Length: 274
Image 1 (cartoon, helix red, strand yellow):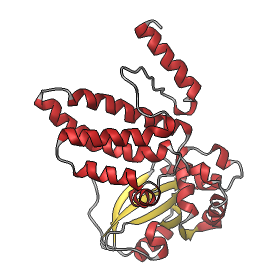
Image 2: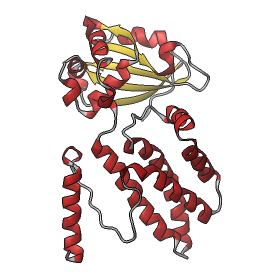
Image 3: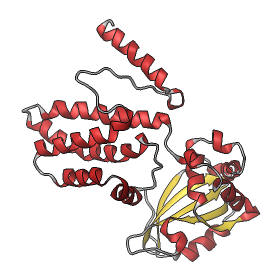
Image 4: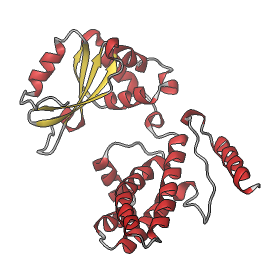
């Protein structure tokens, strides 16, 4: 169960964290790092904890009557960021911590570990924090998979199918929006940053997305959604042709284009014999 909201100030929370025996560091990210909090801003904190809390990843609380968005990392994970080879081998969570830390303001740093890791993270190439080829394939597959199901539902006269399609388009549009960035290997930095990027570099996609959100007629809405699917997937082959065969692999680390092609060919051979 969530704990009750707190009206503690950020300074109070940082002092409490700094004296806690299980906490070794604290960094402030987001708009708070530059003291640019607006009325709608949350407070983003990275908290470095001892190894016994290694299973803790994210938390939500309230600080100064604002939502507190907490990321947790162990001391060893932060230490690994300072390793020269880490940028080549870090797992997804360590990359997320490094990306946060690179632009954060260090508030508590017992032993200087956070500052050393921050300096290293700031030297990591941008590509380290970008979606992988596997992420791009996963986004492409998800958008196409959902589009095929949604087309099928749109063709039905069953009212339950129509309502189900309304629900599916809610999350389908969100997947297209985030998938746009994964497919282009663009680092996801949140919805506001994504909107600013699209406004500058792809206003046509953003305009179509806004129209799709506002559209009430289901047929017209699907037509706009279909346009968005085509725009989002264009760099990696676009939308599936009629009656496609595709395969998705369990292990994203081994999901190379060649592995996907082999798996898809195998699935097609099982079903179609060619």
